[in-house]
Figure 1 (spheres, rainbow, N blue to C red):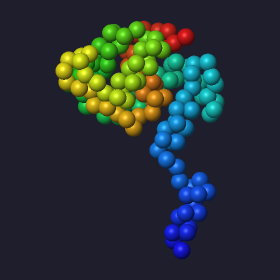
Figure 2 (tube, helix red, strand yellow; figure 1 turned 180 degrees about the vertical axis):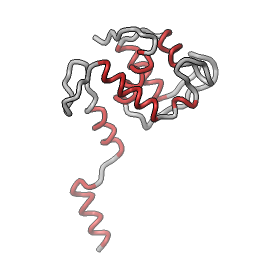
Figure 3 (cartoon, one colour; figure 1 turned 30 degrees about the vertical axis):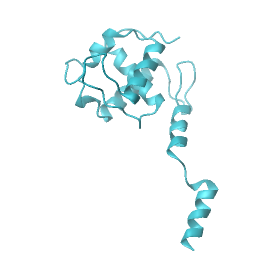
Figure 4 (cartoon, rainbow, N blue to C red; figure 1 turned 90 degrees about the vertical axis):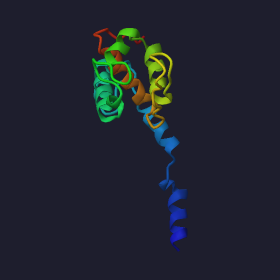
Length: 138
């Protein structure tokens, strides 16, 4: 009987896969030109603030400090190396998700496959904002 109940819930949409959840999170990502579904601003400033909150809640600070080199480069060093463009936001988001090595030395950056593309882009926007450069996202 319990098996039938579980089957009914799953077949009626009670179960969801991680991939669907990740896609939903990506679909909620707003560009600077789109209004947010919840009515809050999706301006670059708001996305940067969201990115800061995501960085603060993550393990990023284990290897990166805002201004001082730790295991990896400081976030400010990253901001100084890369222009604040959409191409670099996408590139750095990929590095957050996939990890990598060689750009800043031989110590590899740990991949974060559980971070959605949308969240990784917000985190990258926050990092790129740290040198004071205005975003050029169009």
